Image 1 (cartoon, helix red, strand yellow):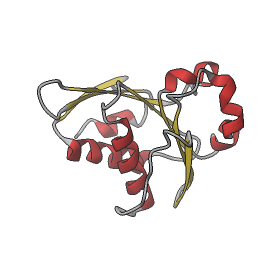
Image 2: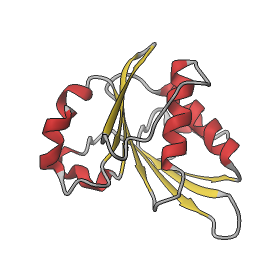
Image 3: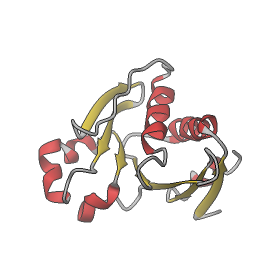
Image 4: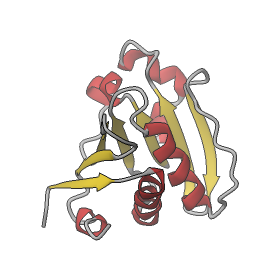
Length: 153
C-alpha cells in the first residue's frame, strides 16, 4: 500500500480525470490540500473535482481568490473551496467558518496558511508544472486506505 503516489499528468484532461477519481472517493469530513506554485493547476483541479462530485460538468466554479471561500451543495453533502493565498495564518480562518466547514469536504489551496488547523488525515496533492510543456507532476500522500485506488491513472 503506497503512502506516496507520483503521477505524470500530461495535460489538463489528465488533471481533470485525477480530480474526478478523487471526487469519487471523497466523503464528508475529508480535506484535500493542494500545494504548488501559481499556475500549477490547483484551481483547475478543484474546479474539475467539484464538477465531478456534483455530477454537473457545467457547474459554475469561480475561483475563491477574492472571496477566500466558496460553498457548494453536493450529493454527498456540503463542500467548501478555500483559497488561502491572501491569509497570513490560521487565526484568520475562524471568521471564514473553518470549523463548520470541516463537517463537509474542504478543498484548500495554499494549505501552508492552515498552521495548527491542518487536518492530520488530509489528502495532500502537490502539483508542479513541467517547464517544457503543459504536463504536471503530481505527488499525492495521505488517505492511506484510499490512495491505492488512485494509482491506476
